[in-house]
Length: 290
Image (cartoon, rainbow, N blue to C red):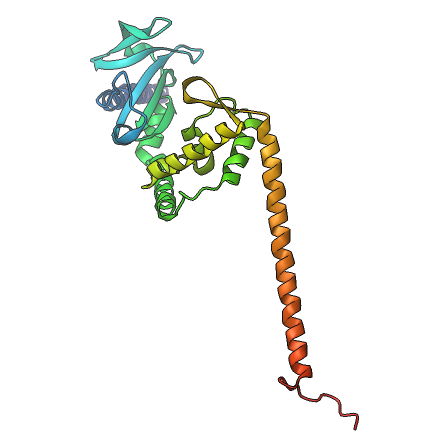
């Protein structure tokens, strides 16, 4: 009798284990379909805008299926029952329509790219997507970063950036040449180097662009820059001589200002001493030797 009870207990444990495994398997299938439906319902078009107002308003997913080695081979387009409709990569573009059985894919075979405004969030697998997408922490960080950039842009727009001087332009072009980005640059790339991309949203950006064009035209006429293809410019050897002269003039100007300040200080001291000797200014007697 005891053996029968033991057998029934073991059998009950086994059936409970089988039931739990079945429930987990069904839950995994259900969660996989649920996540895929949510992703596919917001699939991106073939061309995703990544700039301007169109880029800022975008909110969609580009989903790819990958081989075991992690190399994507098709782009997910639809989900019908247990089949995923994809566009297969033909070596140049995603073009050929194929069907992939959902049951043959593990969670880590999905690569999901969320185009969230001008930001891109990449998920490696459905588990990675479900955790970060529903906790929203990554999106809170993005919104916080955007808020900081918005405040920074606001204060930048309040600044008068049109009065950019020649020495700053020369120094920036020289730095671009040294790091390799000055071999063919334009007015906009030079402004981006000076003010980053904040100048694009400045209310006086057209005046700023006109001012930088005037500086570049002056450098071209002076022989410091050469005009090359497509409105691009390259650095000439004379630029170094011009920068050296500008730095020398700057040092002489600073030295002259210091010299004038010193002369002014000594003049005030002499005037003060003369006023004391003339009796105009009377100082209290500290020691009376009389």
